[in-house]
Image (cartoon, rainbow, N blue to C red; front, side, top):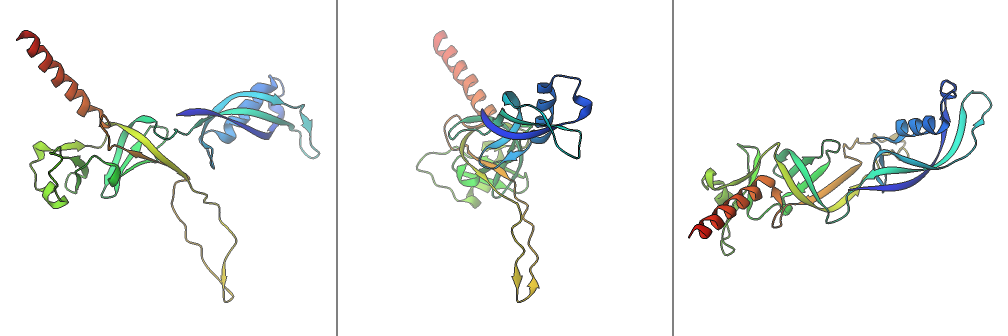
Length: 229
C-alpha cells in the first residue's frame, strides 16, 4: 500500500527558521508543499520519510531566504496490483460502488467487478449479491423481484475487502487555447480525480467482511455440533 519514492527539489527556508536545525526546517517546507498532493505516475504523497542529501544553503539576490537543493524520500500511497485492501463504502449507483480509506476517497468497484449475480436496488440505493446455483442465471429485473431477506447487501458505511485491479492518473493541466475560425473555443472543465483506483469484489473472501465473519461463526457452530455427536 505504501512505498518510498526518491525525489529532488529546491527548498526555500524563511529567515525566521534560521535558529533551528536546517533539516527540520527543510522537512517542514517539503511536507507543506507535497503532503496530500498527487504526483503523476507516482501516487499520493503522505509525508517526508527522510532527507538523503542536502546541499549548502545559498542566498539569492532580492530575498533573505536560504535555498537548499535536496534529495529526499517521500512516503507514497499507491497500492500494487492484486493487493487486498480494507475500505468503507461511501456511496453506490448503477455504475458501481465508491470506497474510502478515510485519507483517500477515489476507489471504485465497477459493476462487472461485483459478485455475480448482483443488482442495484434504487429504493435502497445499494447493490446486493444473491447467492445462487452456478446453473441458475437470473436477469436484473428477476433479481429485483427476489425477497429482500435472501439478498446479501453492500450497504453504505460497511467495511469491505477488495482486490486492486488497476490505477489511473489523469493530468488536468490545461493545454494551449484552441481557436476555431478566429473564435476562441471555451475549454470544458472536466471534474475527474487526478488519481483513481479500480478494485474488485468478485472473488471468494472479498466483499463486506460481515459476510465472511458470519460464515465463520456458522462453520464453527456446525463443527461443535459434530463434535458433540
